[in-house]
Amino acid sequence: MTSVPQIIDDIDRALIRATQSGLSFDPQPYARVAEATGLSEEEVIQRFCRMIDKGIVRRIGLVPNHYKLGLAANGMTVWDVDDDQAEKLGAWVGALDFVSHCYLRPRALPDWPYNLFAMAHGKTREEVREKARRIAELLGPASRGSDILFSTRILKKTGLRLGE
Image 1 (tube, rainbow, N blue to C red):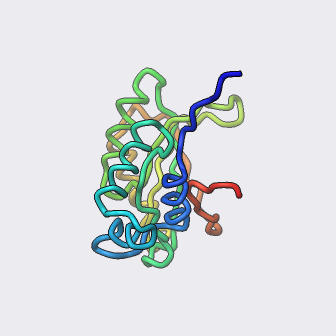
Image 2 (image 1 turned 30 degrees about the vertical axis):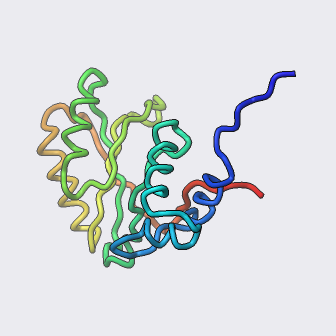
C-alpha cells in the first residue's frame, strides 16, 4: 500500500481556520494571525506563499462590502463582442478604475449573446449607467450589444472553508 502525501499539514490547517472568516482590518494582519496561531509573522507569510504556489490557496484579496462603502447601485455590465477580440477588450475594460472584476463567459445562444462581463459600482443606477457608457465608448464598434444587470441583494461572500 502506498501512502498519499498530505497536501497541507496541521499548521496550514490552523492558518486556514484562523483566516477563513477574513483577515483583521489592521496595518499588520499577518502579525495578528501569527499571534493567534503561535507562529512568527514571517512563517505565516511564507506558508501562505507556499500554499499559493501549490494552488491550495488561489489568492488573498480584498472583498469589499460595496453597500457599506455607499455604493448601493451595483451593475454587471454584459457585452457582445467579437470572440477574436474579447480577451484584448476584456483587459482594457478590466483596467478601468471603476470595474471591480471583468471576465469572459461562453454565450448561450439564441437567448444570451453576451460574452464579456464587467462589474461596475456606483451610488446610483444612473452613475452605473454612465460608467457603462464609458465602457461602450472604449469598446466602440467592437460592441454589438450590451445590457446591465443590477444587483438586488448581497450574496454571502466567503473564502476557503475547511470541513470539520
